[in-house]
Amino acid sequence: MEERLQKVLAQAGFCSRREAERWMLEGRVTVNGHAASPGDRADLQKDKIMVDGKPIGVAEEKRYLMLYKPRGYVSTMKDERGRKTVADLVRDCRARVVPVGRLDYNSEGLLLLTNDGEFVHALTHPKHEVEKHYEVRVRGRLDHIQRLSEPMEIDGYRIRPATVVVLEQDERSAKLRLTIHEGRNRQIRKMCEQCGLEVRRLKRVAVGELPLDPRLKSGAWRDLTPDELAYLQQISVNLQD
Image (cartoon, rainbow, N blue to C red; front, side, top):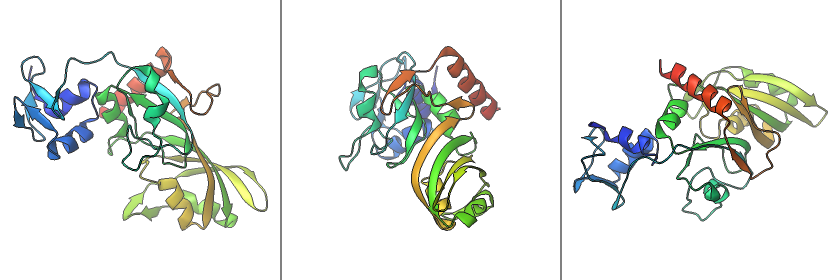
């Protein structure tokens, strides 16, 4: 059955729909020898679909991983600057997984990875707002902490106010629990900078109601449990309704 090509690539576990569209614009995808464009339709069973000159086959078995991403790794599968990537950490899972969203280079904590492109699309599309929870160690203008819960503009975009809970505080620093929705690039660091706060450590501790497994050591991963996967699939369905 013919479907939009970006959906075909996502279902085959190659990438998210948005990434597939970017690949097509870059000329990396062909269908029956012709360059593909976003919106084209194809049938995986009948058409010869190729990415970077290599044919794609039937979908892999779906895998869903929880990784404790350490600091000093980028949330991509390869990096043009030669930095360490999360691909190095999950190489032994033997599946072509991609990150669900991102954590910046100097941040750590819960990162989901999967080869289910539809799952990635559901949880990361800009119109979907999945709560993400972080523990953040800051120092600086501690009297400005509550400004983090007020409306502000980041890179020309007006973000929704964060939920802020002070977990610890002394004269020089504080440990906060921040909950945000959009997850824009370096959002928490930019929010803190606007409030005169320096981020000393940033750790994602939960996505929605799914917490980082406290038994996972930094750099380690495991498959999601059936209950964890069922929860994420349910919220992804709710987001698309």
